[in-house]
Picture: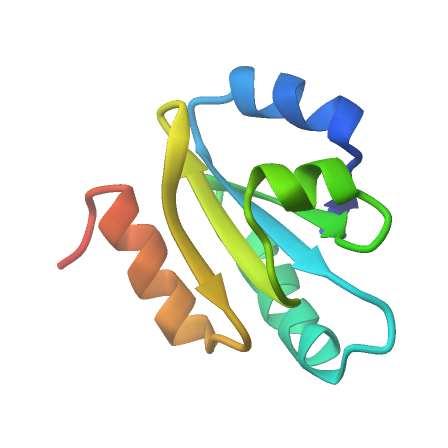
Length: 109
């Protein structure tokens, strides 16, 4: 499942209309780390029904970048229950992201 790219105009509606954990992937073009992280996020998106992952082009969506205080790409914002639950910077392995997701969703073993 391809990760949908969203704009600032779409973001609020998406966040308000879901009870699932939303992961916002702030990325930029010509970012090797962003490119390395993308397939990991694609895998998680395809495997996990309890999350929604959206891409945000950080350079083009400055309003969202400012709103979520994004200083570098890639940055992931984990949003649930009306607030930011966690933010990460840089590459994260699938195992690391799974741990974060399970902790936020309350299903950590």
